[in-house]
Image (cartoon, rainbow, N blue to C red; front, top):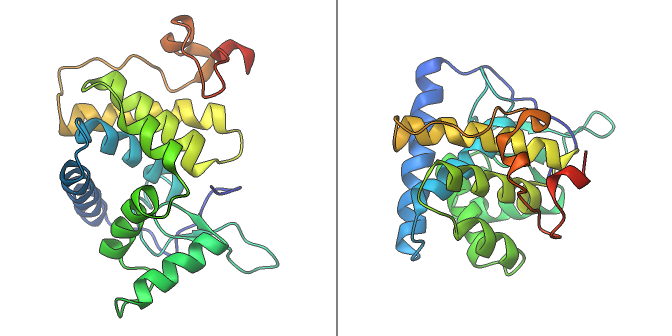
Length: 209
């Protein structure tokens, strides 16, 4: 989604980071479950793996006021998912219709779900990441597909693997701490590479590196 790492306005305290992280996890899990997603925890771990990096990673995580992708000194993207240009404008309109500024975390979570389910622009994104196994691999796969289809950062293949690894950490934290991660976070060392994991165009991972 964004062409460069987003730069938050201010660093967040650790307590604020964890509170926002937990809020996003609980809110999205509840919303996806209400929409009939069979394994919402795995999907949301995948989404969180992306949000972690879209908001600049530690110590800036989850700040809804995050902005970045500057052009001529002016930010062109903002929010926890790094909504870019026209999508950022759509977020602003969505929040304004509710009487809020665009940097409202609750509204951004709702906007994310709206984009996936109501906008009609991300049917593939909605279908692929949400049909995952209820395990740590499902969390990895959800993060990978969300990165590839929804976020689309520079070097999206490597970014997707890194974000998948982060999703595994969230799975261990929020769902099952006894599960062992299956990736290293480094594309060249990913155990999933050896398993012949394929990508949206059905090419194997080794075709990309």
